[in-house]
Image (cartoon, rainbow, N blue to C red; front, side, top):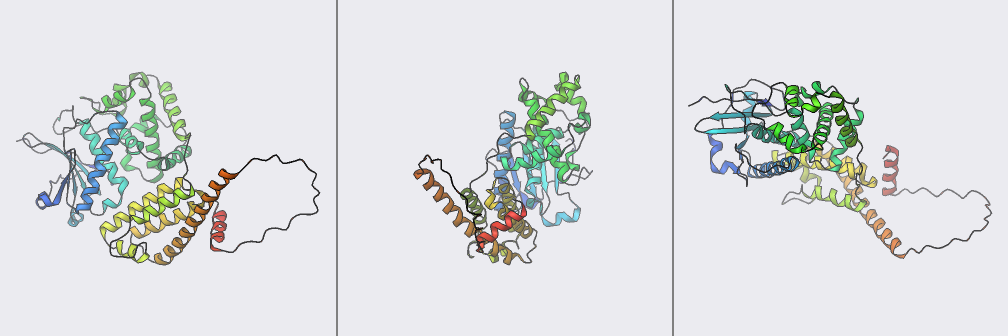
Length: 429
């Protein structure tokens, strides 16, 4: 039998030459694994709820990938996602480890190992799953030569990872492109490793990658050519030469390539429409996020219940996911709620990181403000509905009005909702 061959891709700590490890025997038991509907994904380890969530996310990510590429589901290689036990830390395992195992009799398998605590970083896990899916597509036509193969282009993986984002999430992409310094050197961009980038640099690379994807997709037969580029039987090892294999007309005309890419970035950095939610819708979505954090047997919406939730790994994962949802809500929130939603995001993120000091007081104050805002938003909506239904345009006669003096300024209000609105105004929202 051919010896196992593998490639290690460390999405969190860069590339490293580590020895591939098969799934631990205890994780192979039926009660410790979950299989997806398409049968392509098998999740090992963790809790049943963690495996169910990962299975749904993996299938959703695959649907988005196939939709963006306008391709059909013809997978050949299964993907194993392993939630390694706590002792994985002893081996200094990277947070996310992607490997390929190939044997003549057992067949080929792609394995994605997630170190303990990695589930809290939802974005990184999703990127790891997408890389596994792209790797599976890239290996369909490639042949192993002494255990080596060519990885999917980094720019394509980065573009797909943000292509299905909501309008609120794309706001960070717009900001990244506007902060950029124009169109970068293309060959340097192609050779850039997304796994080595952090923070704003990673966001900028993702935005530039999505712009390149959009520009190429708009060409004649564009998406099919992108799929052909991904699934080439003999792709060049150098990223620039590989790009030239599929788009020689652009590689031979740098000015045309720069115009295409620059125009795509301009379109992406100037969104035509970013819909904001109404006050009532914002309040309802925020309430829904908090409701998903309820723990059976505890008082609904209490600070104590959330602090109890933060003491378990599953709870920390749920809190981190809620913090991400509130972050997305901030971009589309009604101005009346924007600052408050930002406060909830900060509180939930700190609680997910087990920072509980002062949480109860802050949360109680935020809840009181939220309920007051909900009541005020309902009153505003009711009034606007009544005004639109009963307002009759009248012709105002032209008269001469003698101004006797400046009117007295209105007396300032000192109720809780007015103080909150004053603080929002001072913060610049």
